[in-house]
Image 1 (cartoon, one colour):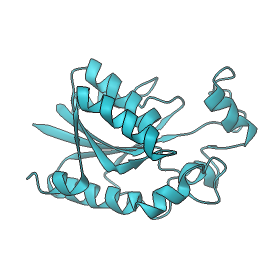
Image 2 (cartoon, one colour):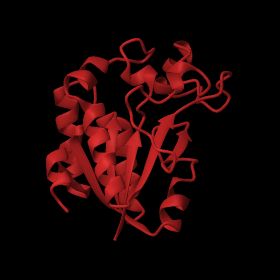
Image 3 (cartoon, helix red, strand yellow):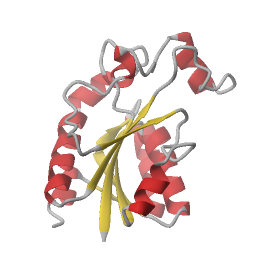
Length: 191
């Protein structure tokens, strides 16, 4: 069965302390999320799995953003996640190879208005491994949509992060109902 590892929203504005939306950058550093994601993508390359890096990103005029959503109007207020600027680029330290696929999304879900599902189906992917930020937003919604598209889902709990332990625990409790929640170590030992 073909697998894909999907990293979500690992951009400077969210993950770097200097980022405009870095509400939990300290948790990302403290819990070594980028290091764990790199371990997972390194493992996945050895398994010849597809690796897809998805990032939130907007035009500088935000015409591809939402003028209704509290999440995305906050990005506009802070001039955050502009694709062509530092804040909208993938985090320093995130290891991306030339063969990795990169997708820009404009909403919470990695599936909404992107070619993610087309790429997964074209490559006969049946199972996806989700990592990144935030556990209770992009990771959870992408997992929900993957579930409804009949993909098997693995969520790597220690390679995701959000604002606090309570939100993360609540999200992971739900995700365990639709997928397999495991640690980086469990995943790396699974082959």
